[in-house]
Image 1 (cartoon, rainbow, N blue to C red):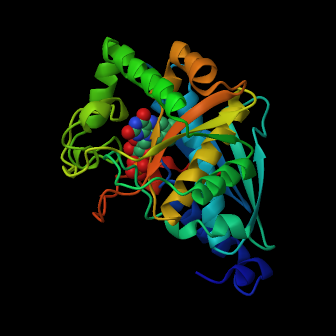
Image 2 (image 1 turned 30 degrees about the vertical axis):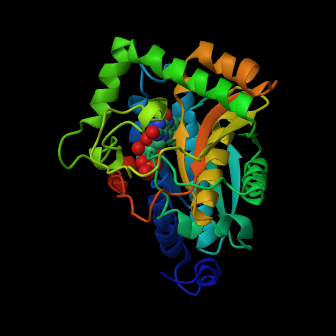
Length: 337
Ligand SMILES: Cc1cc2nc3c(=O)[nH]c(=O)nc-3n(C[C@H](O)[C@H](O)[C@H](O)COP(=O)(O)O)c2cc1C
């Protein structure tokens, strides 16, 4: 692939070089996290731009009836695309919801020949290393400076980040998470959907594989692992978990707010990875109206809308977690117009 300046100044045919770059960026964007690894997105590459569309066929009707998780997943992919392009040395202009008549057209990202956003390009190498780590985390609290940096990351993308620091707030939040897990366990459609996405056929390109799920619930905190036990070894020596919880928040709760919350979630996860921290999104409490409301009013005491809870901490050991599969580019690319 030519350098970015070659691509946009015409020393090699601009369109094919740029198209190659955009394809490579979309492929990296598909490494984004998504609810149950559904990858509910589609992409169109045209001229100097990449379009992101929601794939409603992949919405989890029982777990995510109002499409919040879907939108947040797409926001994660949008941020991953932005980081990928910046890492390749180019700038972007993002137009969110550009088509009032098609609300599933979530964004158009134009590639610009000017300087990349340095803060985003710094996250480039984290794309390939980030994993959702569902194990109990190792000893040591997350340093205040790291938390401050994560808050700044969320703000850059237009969202808030609420670290849950005090023990009483944490206890209230743990109770809401446990109640959400309990309520969903008794919802037959929910359980069937969970099993559909964790027991995929061999060679499947989506879903959550057993190798990414702890082989036993992390002791009393099993509210943190919504999946049935998998094959991932969980270190026995950790009797307590020093991971902390943070909540991604927005002022509004429409499609745009959820998309932006997804971008902020991705920024936090990649920044945590870059800092050597383990992380895992936890969306159960946000999926039910009653626990979402309790989360805001009783646990966090905030007027804003919580969109996602993320657990962050030190990895329990230096095991490299396996990469989860992704659908091939051919399955997620739309034909040019
Ligand atoms: C909107 C959203 C909600 C998620 N909710 C949970 C969750 O409640 N519990 C969990 O263990 N993982 C959750 N995840 C993580 C996904 O399961 C994970 O991203 C996916 O399986 C791909 O694996 P990877 O992140 O390791 O690449 C969520 C991710 C997103 C984007």
